[in-house]
Amino acid sequence: MNRTLYILILTAMFFFNQKKSGAQNYHETIDNIAFENQLIGMSVAVVCNGSISDIHNYGKADLNRNIAVTDSTMFRIASISKSVTATALMKLFEEGLFGLDDNVSDYLGFNLYNPQYPSQSITFRMLLSHTSGLSDGSGYSPFLSATANQNPPPHISQLLTPGGLYYTSDMWLSREPGSWFSYANVNFGVIGTLIERLSGVRFDIFVRENILLPLGIHGSFNISDIGNINNVAVLYRNSIPQADNYQGIAPPPRDLSQYNIGTNGLIFSPQGGLRISAADLCNFMIMQASGGKWNNMTIFDSTTINLMPQTQWDYNGSNGNNYYNLFRRWGLGFHLTTNTLNGDIVIPGTPMTGHPGEAYGLISDMYFEKVKQFGLIFITNGYSGSAGYAWGNYSAFYLPEEQIFNAIRQFQFNGCFSVSVQEEPDHQETTPIRYNIGLNQLEIEPQIKNGTLKLYDITGRLCFSIKINKPTVQLPALDKGIYIARIMSSAGNMGCSIVL
Image (cartoon, rainbow, N blue to C red; front, side, top):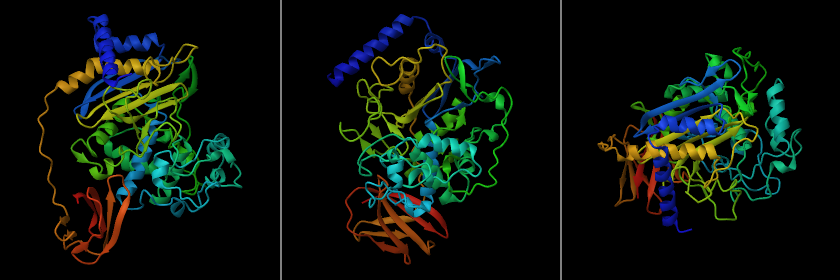
């Protein structure tokens, strides 16, 4: 179908639906969507121009005890958790502790490789973009069970290396590392383990101290951190509890006295175990959309955050599993939409960055665009009907997701974009690095001593590294373009963008 015609048809559909709804307001519309799809509970949040413009809740967080969904309700948000885990890993990248194209075996303490391609490195970039060749094979579920129940839990190498107690040959695809996209939870089990190995801190604690608390988020990957267990939503299929059915009684803290940090990052489910409210998830989304800032604070360097939505994989019809046409482009820990018909449409005609989630009856979505810093979050804790969720009419999302996206577009998105925003000049910070184009040199502030300079291209690939021992650094011949310079020294870690 012609793309222009397709957009016109969708636009006509939206205006027709809006006219048909008459005087219905936005909240009534999404409440009707929830009712018609037999959703048990729901939170929908919208961010406009970098701040929360609307949060609406519907239904029950706990059917048995008649507890309503509120702004404080925390959901186990499934795979949106991966974007938070990826961001935690990028905090360590920002500190200069690894390069995206480094072999992760150099950090894990064991050799991680595809047995069919034993000489090929598995890199951080591959894990973040689901191109490592790892798969959730038949050994994955038994390993998760052992991880949850054994003390100490098994070493992750027992799942991933030939001869391991839980290893099965289908843990690896018959694809060369880096050549094929296949969405897999186990990639993020490895990332969780790497976070522990690099930081020396348990995964749940590192994420809470470095990502969640700085963003004012009360959620956690560890249920023991949740102050009020009644705020945690029960997850349902056909009104039957599937997970987090605590009934007001907090589970006892897990005994991890025998756990060695860095041996099994799957303990706290970095692939899907974050419990967080829609309101708090907005804080994370705002930070991502605004280039690392939240509440007038710099949480991340913008050069780090802006790497994450850079395209790492594009579907060409024969280079990966596109997951029912939903996944057609991927960044570092983020799904990037292409607005393909019957595929990855959130807001028609507008590329979005984010992540979906699905587990135990819950479905969840977090998507944003950075130009106007518009974003949306939809979370439901399950359904009451026996049929489950119907497929969408023109996208690869489920029908309730598609309908909620439509309502947000009708009532929220266009209004956000029509708002006139006074553009503020970029904040100018003194940079420790200047580029001398005539001499092809970097000039470095004299107080920077005994450090290391690393130069990355905009995809995060390391292009140049050198020890600093004088105030000028001669660069090799590099392609023209934008580069990210990072200095790690006794004076601190600094970075800036450089145009060559």
